[in-house]
Length: 165
Image (cartoon, rainbow, N blue to C red):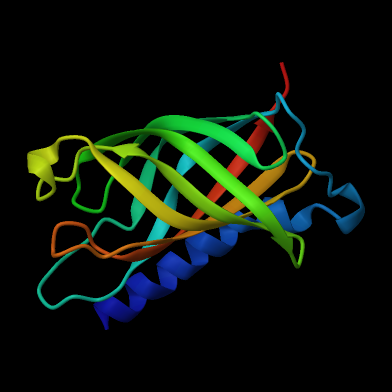
């Protein structure tokens, strides 16, 4: 019963986080431009179940993304990872393909803070991503890899806000 309530709350949280994005009309959709700056409060994740393990699915933090071009943006920040530790990251999104209004590609970078991966040290990271951006809001989805019981696979959803100084 408790597990069902947690799943219900997780999906409710995901819906509430995505509501501002869905509220923007289709006419308001505009491609990102070079120089755009996006802020994000971390992400939420759904970890693929593993017997006896408990994961943090509310990965709060702070990230910043700077758009170099339509296809490339640079990102860095921190978040509370799946293992209940703080992680820092830096890297680039490369999203060269567009389909169904989404940009598709990968994030490649360096992340740290996972205790079973190099004792929490920094390591290279690569994951597939899909992003969609409107005038002020955006959403990113990624499928994190599962790696030898050191990193735990998950589906993540991230909301971001375009900052205009």
